[in-house]
Length: 297
View 1 (cartoon, rainbow, N blue to C red):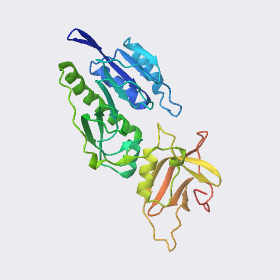
View 2 (view 1 turned 45 degrees about the vertical axis):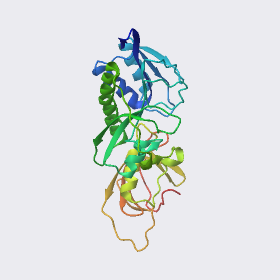
View 3 (view 1 turned 90 degrees about the horizontal axis):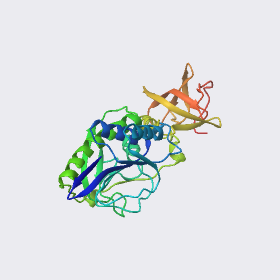
View 4 (view 1 turned 180 degrees about the vertical axis):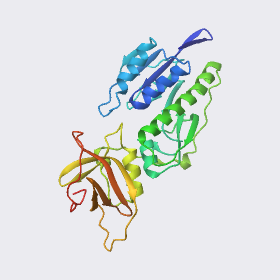
């Protein structure tokens, strides 16, 4: 979509990828906001098929679809940047970066995963002007939503995509009217979220069962899934539930306490978890057959 103000033709340009990206584009179109250009790229760890979804949405409304990790952004355009993992060299006056937290909390990487593991009851989205510092730029707008547990990361990401669309409608209207304004973050209240890699998918059975359960839900689809070692084999845990704890004279986290039709009940640092749905690396189902096993070994 383009607009003409002061004789200058201005366009909406979106740079996005991942599950949120597809939901974001679909939401914009539902609001009547049609991007002139959509930039995207394939993510090797994205299991959601989002790249194909984004391309199909672009084609459906005749938006230009460009595969490029380093887009060329123009002054005057409203440049919306969602889930982008590469440096954009040229930052323009109307570049809007969306971050999956209520800044200044959770600056950095994978903020939604970190917030869900911690058990935050409110999640949100911030739109900011990009600067050299990590998520330190002036805020253009923020929006939040209450959540309850248990919640899967996919559901949280979809909520955030909806929040982004609502926030974008406000920003779009302000951009058209020339009233787009920003305000500085309170840097004294900043917290940070570290990058995550494969090691961060491994379950620490010394943690409380409730926190482990939140971690399982937070790194599931579209991410790779929480995992543990079972007799030398990597097992991914997709579903788990808390069961009533017992008083052990010597608590030894990671040991299987009981088996229920192939579902293991595992001792945690505090509490017990029942592993409801597990699979191997090749995605074949995994059922527990042996009681005397300590997970993570």
